[in-house]
Length: 134
Image (tube, rainbow, N blue to C red):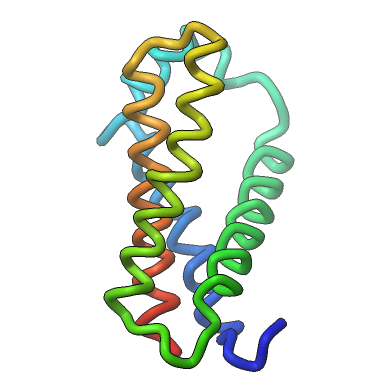
C-alpha cells in the first residue's frame, strides 16, 4: 500500500460501511422494502450461516475501503474531493453496475433504489472518513 494510505482510516471506513449496511437494511430503514424487492420472507432470512454472511461482508467492506483509499492516496487529496469521489464510486460505478444486473434480472426499481442507495451513501461515508483522516 501507498505510504499515503492511513490504515486506521481504512479500518474505520470499512467499519462505517458495515455499520451503515446494518442500519440501512434494518426494519428501521429499508429492510422491509429490500425484502419485498427480493421476494424474501422472514424464513428466507434464517437460511445460511450468519457467521459466514457477516464475516465475508466485513471482509468485502474492508476490500472496498482499501480500494477507495488507494484511489484517494495522493497527498493533495482534499476532504471535498474524497467525498465527491466516494459518491462517484458509489453512484457512478457500484450502483449503476448493480442497475445493469438488476435490469437483466428483471428486478423492480425498488431493488436498485434500496441497494444502490446503500452503495452510494456508504461510499460517500467512506470517502469522508478517508478524506478527513489523512
